[in-house]
Length: 328
Image 1: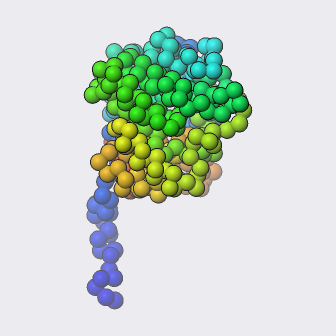
Image 2 (image 1 turned 120 degrees about the vertical axis):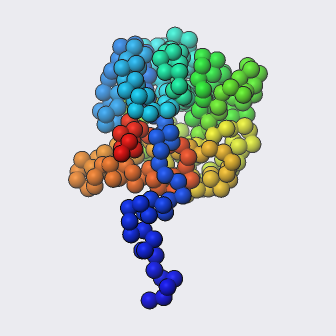
């Protein structure tokens, strides 16, 4: 056998196997998506998301305190309003007495070192369940949609969010949010993370159950990217870097590893996030429950593939597990 054929000598030991990766998983790479509802004392199990709940602001200290002690560095807040009156503009999204702004202020007081990111979208707050303002025929009206999304983002930043992350996929919203942050004196005080390549995926089902954000009619295929659209994803990533995004995100993660790799190539100087979405998380749990594989082993394999593709930040419901698993 030729000398150049022998590779196994380089990974025959557990330690030397670990050296083969360009980057290893760390606790700081994980951001925990959490659902905040407008019942302040809520702790409601989400059946389609194993181990996850909707939380009220009065429950946040008991819920997150042990995780922060284990090394939790960041969270992404999603509002789940159940009591408010929704309308066509998503007015409750930045209500000062709403769940997200109350949670921002509570977490800033409770955990000064915790990095607080906020998802910015209208779908949880609009009467029609779409992510923007609509024309009379039910299609997206881009200009007022972008204006409203930017208002919400700025109000979250004014409330104390360290990061605002628009997930709506409206054209031009990154530039509008960046301008709004700058005009509010927050341009150098709040990170702008763009869901740049967010695909119209079937993997959002459990999330829509958790957040009550399914559209009341139609679908989101005219603003979320088609799953086959590699070129569109590349263009969206490039657009958002030019418009002022500080972090680029790809969502979902596992079916779109090639897009994560593309983003690492197109925006090499930006942090690169990916979202291991609700359906991915539920699938890993379902396979483990069926005896197909070990849960921890598959959780590592999936997230390590994202890092291999180029991700530097992973939004995952597995975050509490990794705080334990990475302790060893």
